Length: 504
Image (cartoon, rainbow, N blue to C red; front, side):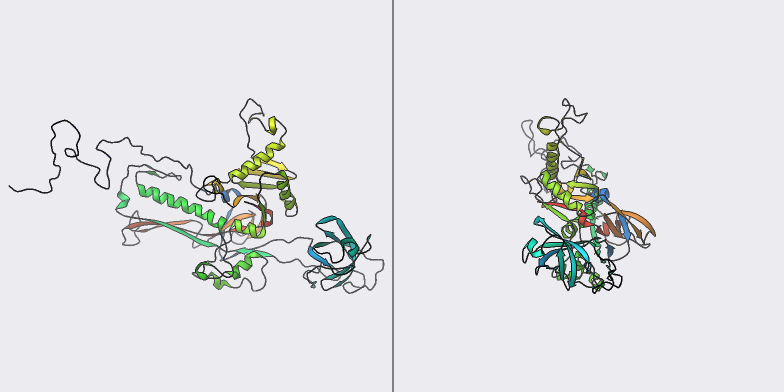
């Protein structure tokens, strides 16, 4: 008798009624197995243990998005109306070197007959008001009004002094005066404003997701659910949806964290010194003519918000909730643009430091604590948080920034996944009016805004398209569906001197 081998579905009977691997079909010997033959109780939906996982939204709250058509975006910023000289040094009894050359039409803000204030920042009591009698190169001859001499006031060879002009004084019928004034006694030199510009360049951000045609028909037992509303039992929909969400976060993270290549390094060894110099300070003749640096393959980076504030803004290190530290920030804002309304985006630890600082200032309740969320009644639940406050002449609106709290990016307590070196940022709520050549009209834009490449032929703000031969795309003979994502953008941080970065 012949034997058929293998014997599919063979059952070996048992003398007793019991479940054995010899008399029941097995489901645990393959890659798609169950632990036993009974159907388990299955929760189809995933548990959202991390809540909303997306990190974007910061720039939508504080900025705008505007189109651009070039490889660069360049803007100019006003300089100060009054110019002072720091790090000045006494070179004689009544002579002081301001350490900057006096060049006609550039920075000759101090001429004969001007009156100046000379002060020692380390000793505010040592302040002298003097009359400028002569200017020779970088050295001023200035005679104090009420002191015997400069040397008698500050000490011979004093350094680190500050000088600024507060007016001028001329005698009656001055007639011919020393060089620098005409026959009427008026100053002949003009003070031309400096032309200061800053710039940034867009970067191309890309991502994609691909799946074979066969796998698009796979039905899973876990129900798909993502933040953008994708649902069903096709697992590739979840993967495609999460790729899109992750890319949308990259659009914000790339311009927040971006850095420009320096003079000696860069991806592939391509130096970006030409461009780093343009971003780091005022643009000079010939400095922004090297458009060959934007050729294919030269990934020079882009200047993000953190880098811009560190280069041109203010950095507060080690803020622990002391009111004196916060008042020092206000004093610095007074010396800058003095924008009245500001927004604070903070990690959790710094936000709690602010709450504690404000609670101490409130005299109501035990220990300086505000009681309730309803009419400050002590029978109600405690409200220990502050969403906004006013200090001096400034208004601040405080919120938690998820990007600084998420453990997969810069967040996490020091007891868990490590702390970030960025603890928060103060963003001014001001706007400026400019003429936009693309839109052809005057627009108001915030100090912090995104520029993306766009023209009549192509809008590269956020592109997505299908390639392959699956899912409605018939662009190739490859049996895949490929979802492509692309954007080209950069961030403009204007008036960075009004921003404050809180650093560990």
